[in-house]
Every structure is written in structure tokens, then in C-alpha cells.
Length: 94
Image (cartoon, rainbow, N blue to C red; front, side):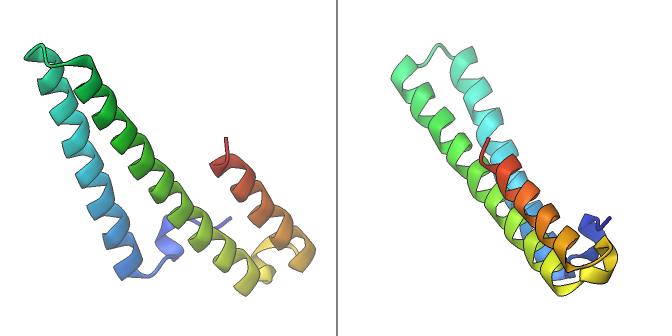
């Protein structure tokens, strides 16, 4: 089964940058709560984190699906590769 190590280094670096940005956003939300900020401001920031996580999930799904389709020998054939790509799409859509 493929791992994130199968991705190109530039793609892994981009995923790490996005995760660090999300981490910073969540730390900002923690500070907002500690400071007693307005609930609507906090909810806006939570929506931003959710959107960032969804975007990151889509990047991972795209990379995984491309890997599946380009390397069917890693999955006992092309049918199984497609099944795995579809599973990844379903998981990201949850």
C-alpha cells in the first residue's frame, strides 16, 4: 500500500506547509477563546480551519488517486487500484 513517502518531495513539503498553517490557525483560535473574543469571530476562524482541512484532504486524495492509477501493480491490478482511489474519495467526503 502506498505511503506519503511515495509522493514527490515538493508535494510532501507543500502538505507540511499547509499543516503548519492550520496548526497556527488552531493556536489562534485557542488564544481567541482565552481572551474571551466574540463567538462569531471564533466561528469564522473555525470555518477557515475546516475549509483548510478540506483543501488538504482533497490534495491528499488527488495525490493518492493519481498514484493508484499510475501504479496499478501496487494494488493487484488496475481494478483494485481504482477501488482504492474511490475509497480515498469516499473517505475525504465524510
